[in-house]
Image (cartoon, rainbow, N blue to C red; front, side, top):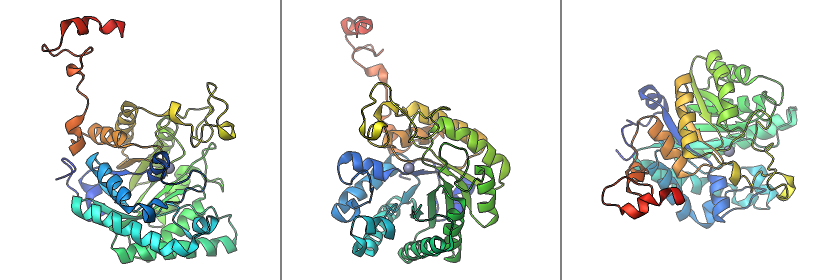
Length: 351
Ligand SMILES: [Zn+2]
């Protein structure tokens, strides 16, 4: 098995019944850092321009412990492509992203997921309800044609938009993971508590409900607890790997007194580096969330493969990347291995 000890099957629900499922995310931030898409619009143009790199990132994340290969269709929707004047590439981009993810999922025996997300069109009136439903229908239709194992609907800050996404996925006959994006105030944009919103999604047929993006481990955990107490089914948690806290619960609200001159006066999205969680903080989060009963785990914008490996190891797994998990006993200065030079080890306190 390429992903360690977990027995993964083609069904999300069978996999969840067998144990926690890890879904690595955050592809937009990763490719922005690498220079293959632009911060701002955040459209996954790399899917068409450098498909080999997307294949490689999927492989790296499975190597690190992800049980799911999620098609990189986040923000590959009609509104975003219109914004950058490339609406004509919509179908091609979705097809390509799905084909790439399917190839890696099938070669590694992991789950193949379709993905839809916040449209930034929804405002709670009938016109936007119709528009977002049509956007979801075309993307979910392509995902079903591609043969996905389930569909993720993610990063919804409107509970009602999430319900529309869920309805489209269920009408297509697919299992649905629906996750909400909760900003500074602990509620959806229409004012539902996260627990209330998740209860509504569960009642409407979601297979997994929970939270993704926006909040780091520290400010997501209390909300997860309230959700876990309220719903009966599977709960999802995919925080951003940043040190959000009570005074700045979202990664957009973080401020950096050491560098107040970042563009826009805030670290989000391109100057968040000083706030990054270490792999150990992600391991701590994983254990805390798993103790609460969270079964579907991942890391969103800002995640690197080291975070995913750490998450997998915190669940007791040894993905292929664990072969290279740190062993400081062999470090020239800080190590304990008897073959190391005594003079260097004695110099350790001078480093
Ligand atoms: Zn995210």
